[in-house]
Length: 269
Image 1 (cartoon, rainbow, N blue to C red):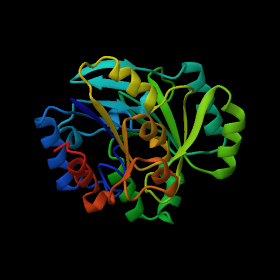
Image 2 (spheres, rainbow, N blue to C red):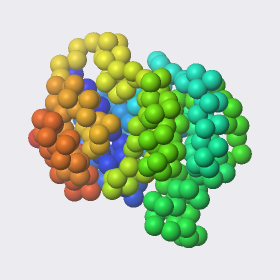
Image 3 (cartoon, rainbow, N blue to C red):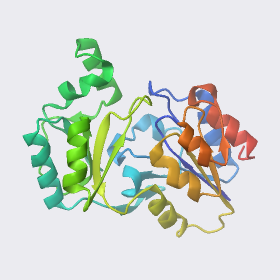
């Protein structure tokens, strides 16, 4: 049995949220052959929508390692300390940042999130607000921000505030950035130190028997450790050069059937 760890954004889906039909077919054929395929993503469980699950997966590593689910059973569900959530929320509110809390139970945004995220699209227009709602359809804006179920926190990126966040919280929280467009980082992120995709991959593999080879597919800096750790690391054609340099194989762009081509090349289908 071979086990595939598959990033979502920029790897399984393109940045318009479309999943190539060839990728769906490849995943289903690989599982029919007895291989296991796990979504392995920075998205929290609440952000993995039903249309993705309908493709057919053996489970999920979510929140960059904070959450592990296998065949409907939750194996790991880590949360940030409530005191850290309270402190980071207060810090972001004081600076007028737009942000949202990510948990298994939902995505909870503050009232500035949409306005502060408009820089991603260049300007604040009704059409761009509608596009943001399309990209993140399940955001909850009237939920409590004082929570004990938060896996991580994302905030609309301001370079000055990111540097301050790193200085203020970097010794006790993981402070990183990520992109929702593939064009550059648009969000900063707070999470638990020492937890990442590789940490979760190791945990999940320890629960499986008969694993012959492991594969990691990704397109971003957050996928690098996973791509280096697995037996075969595959970078998508739309990945930055730094990721391509450490991968065992570089496939085509996500929108050019890159996933299916690599599955075929390595005999997964």
